[in-house]
Each structure stands twice: as C-alpha cells, then as structure tokens.
Image (cartoon, rainbow, N blue to C red; front, side, top):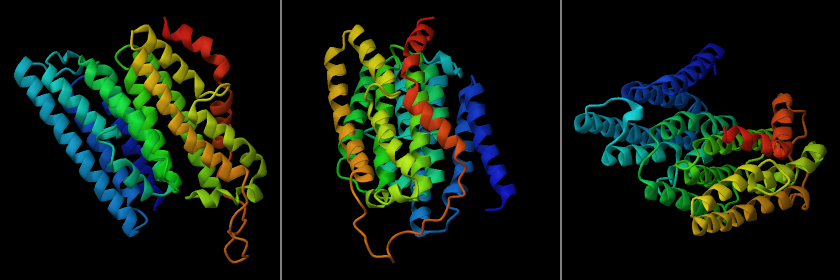
Length: 348
C-alpha cells in the first residue's frame, strides 16, 4: 500500500477514535465511530484475497447495522427525553438499544458471530488493529452511558465468557482462537462495568497489552495455525520459551499480569453479592485456559509434523521491529506486583 494512503487511513483511525472520546453529543460520537469503520475497511481489503474481501464485507455490514441502531436509539432518546447528551441517558429503552448496538460493535455474545469469521480473513497486522484499537471507542461510550439495566450487562458478560471459552476449544486457526479469547476478555470487562468502571478500564488495558504481544509473536513466526507454531523453536528459541507464559497470562494464571484484572473483578462481584456469577465466570476461565495450554503445548512440547525439507518454512531473519514485542511481552508477564498500586488508584 502507498505510504501516503496508509498514513491517511491510520490518521483517520486515530481521529475517529479521538472524536468519539471527546464527544458529549450522540451525533458526534456516531460520526467518530463511522470514521473509524471507514478508515479500517481499505486496510482490511488491501490484499485483494477473496477471503479478505469477504471479511471486509461482513465487517462493514455488522458495523453499519450497529451504527444505524445507535443513531436510531439516540434519536429515540432525544424524542423521549429531549436530550442529545451522552451522559443524560435516563430512559431505559434507548439505553438498552445503545448497549446492544455497542455490544455488536465490539463483538460481545450473543452478537459475536461476525468476529471470528472477520478476524480469520485478515492478516495479523490488521487483525491486531481490529482486536485492540477498534474496541476503544465503543468502550468509551459504554463507560460513559453507565447502563442502568444491570441484568442485560450481566447476561452479556456471562454469555461472552461462556462463548469465548467454548468457541475456542475446537479451533486450529490462531486468529479464530484470538477472536474467541477477545470475546471472553470483553465479557469479563462488561461483567464489572456497572460496579467499577475503573476496574473495567484496568482489565481493558491489560487485555490490550497481552493481545498486542500475542499478535506480534505470531506475526514474527508467520504462524496462522497451531501446527505452524511447532516450527518456532528453530527460529526464535528464547521467544518460544517465553510465549507459553504469555499465553498463560492471557488465561489469567498467577503470578502473571493477566491474573490481576480477573482477581479484582471476582473480588468486586463477590462484594456486590454476585458470588454465583463470579463462580460461573471463574469456571468459564478454565475453558479459555484449556486452549491457551493447547497452544503452549503445541509451541514448546511438540516438533513440527512436517519433516520434509520442502514443507519447512524458510528461516529468514524477520524485518519486524522487536522493541514493541519486547516491551509488551515484559509488561504482559511482569506487572502483577503493581496490583496494590492499581487497587489504590481504583479506590481514589
């Protein structure tokens, strides 16, 4: 892609998210979300592969549906209450419609089925943008409206953790596994959104760091399915030793960074008298842990099934920058000691 066009599209992505962050009026927030969608579409379709074009079309249709629903709900809110302000969502009907529209935008269950299909059709770089940056603007709106209907949020959260754990069990494609991992993590964030928005933001931040790192590892190894991971020991032995820790951090095991948000979310849910919900969420985390362990096993404890010289990928040095990977991997593995500081900040 022409670097000028790429720079323009990335600027559009950044500007769309920033407009949504800064807006207090629903029309401006909607405009930011639309800019975001329109800026990423050429990045998704740039390879002209039928699967990429199909993924782009699916993404466009779901995002357009969600944006239309959001616009309809905000107009309904203005009609019922006379308010266009994002923070003045007092009527339950438009609030529920907007919550569902934003759930469709970020891919929460039960409106999640587009996400694995779309992510599978993209290359790892665009998939990384879709899994991280594209979640920020809808999340900012969800945090701002503070949905009053707690039942729908808990239902969305529990359904997402269940679907995210269950859906990833049978997958061999890494991008689909990462999509289901994303759905499960978003479910955890939504569960605690109404009780502690700052805890949701902490969970989002750790999710972004861990997902960024995981995508970069797969990109460095040029791996798109589980079998391709088995050749990584020959290319990057040190990184192959660290990657299982990274995957277990995504699964939420102590003493890794990913344990911090899960631990605090379970604690908060129990404080709110939702011990059964917390128990269910903790059990669904075991489902996710299974497929992270499966990836770890395939990467470190198995050799590639292909011994033919013609099948083994060329071991050429990668042109990818390793500094972002080093920083994000370190952050994804070693930030658990900062948990007391995070708790102190959350209680301010």
